[in-house]
Length: 114
Image (tube, rainbow, N blue to C red; front, side):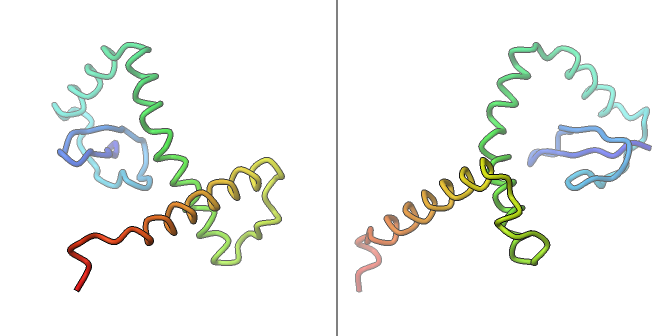
C-alpha cells in the first residue's frame, strides 16, 4: 500500500512507496483520493511545477539550517566539517537571522509597556 502526505486541508500532496517523514499514512492503492491526486498531478504544467518548487525553496532552506543546527548540537557533525561554500552561506544566514532577532527585540509595542 502507498503512503501519502497531506496538506493542512487534508488534501494529498505527496505519494510514496514507503513511510517517510511527513508521509506515514497508508492508503489503498485504488483509493479515489489517489486517483484524483494522480490525475491532478498529470494536468500540472511545467510552469506550475516550477512555481511550486520556487515557493518551497525558502522553507527548504530553513529546514536545512535547522537540520545542520540539530546535527551540530548533537555532536554528529562539527561546523568545520561543512564544505567552505556551505559554511560561508550558513554563517551569513545565521548572522542575518541573529541581527533580525536583535532588531525585533528593540521594538517595543505599546501594549508591552506597563
